[in-house]
Figure 1 (cartoon, rainbow, N blue to C red):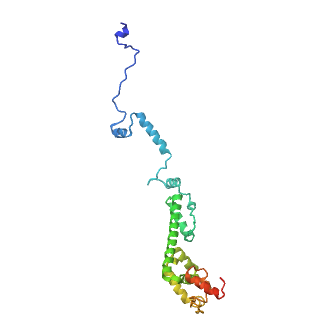
Figure 2: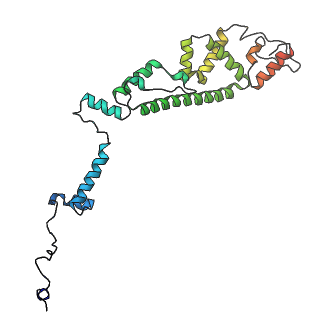
Length: 251
C-alpha cells in the first residue's frame, strides 16, 4: 500500500473541503423583502437594483410641496403642457362654429396653462364640450320641429316662415343669442315669434285679403304673399303653390 493510500489521499496539495456558511447576507429586518423577491444571494439583489435604476432613469419626477416654481413648470412641460397658453389649439368642426368665443377661450387657455394641463387633454375636453353643445342644439331643433308640426299641421310651413321673418327684423345680437343658446328652436319661442309677427309685420306679408277660391273652394291663408309658400314641403305649401301658379305666379 502506498503512503498516499495509507493516508486516505490527503496531502498538502489537496483542496480544502467546501463549507456552507450558515450566516445570512442580509439583516433580519430585510428577511421579508428577500423572501418576497426570491433573492438567493446578494448578487441577485444587486442585479434587481440595477434594473430598477434603469427603469426609473426615464421617469418624470413628481413635484412635491417643496418644489420650486421652475421645477414644477419643468414637470408640466415634460407631461405635455405647452410653453405658453397660445400653444393650445381649439379645432372648429362642422356644427360648432357658432359656439366659439375667442375671449372665453383665451381665459380657459390661461387657466389650463397655469394648472399645467397637457395640450392633448385641454383640446380633447374643450372639443368634447363644443360637440355636446352642437348635438344638443340639433336634438332641440328636431324636437321643436316635431312638436310644432303636430300642433300646426298643414300650417307649419307658413307659421314657421312668419316666425323667421319676425326674427329677421330683430337685432344681430338677439339673433346670435337665439342660435348659441338654442332658444331659436324652442317651440314656445317660435310660437311667440309667430304671434308677434302676425301683429307687427306688414299686412301684405301676414294678413292679406282672401282671394278668389278655386273650384273646390280653396284659397291660401296668405293670398298676397306667394313667396311664403316657395320652399315649404307640407301639403298646405304644395296646394298654395299650385293655387298661385294657376293665377300666373312663377316660382
